[in-house]
Image (tube, rainbow, N blue to C red):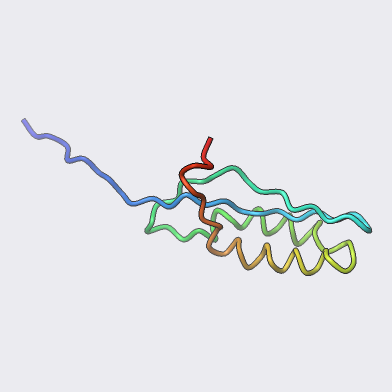
Length: 87
């Protein structure tokens, strides 16, 4: 009888940001924490959040374009989440 070996991949817990702007108001909306395997690139998970930021984030001046650029940079790798902040 064969036993299946246990598979334990290292995971990272990260969060992504979406930016939404309306003329004079810019909101940064954090995502829920995502568990991403160490071997998988985080930008695949952050891509939908980046698309929303590109579409809706740059509409307010001056903070819209700046916050959108920051979100695009951070969504490439995700923002690390502490163990204490996970619900």
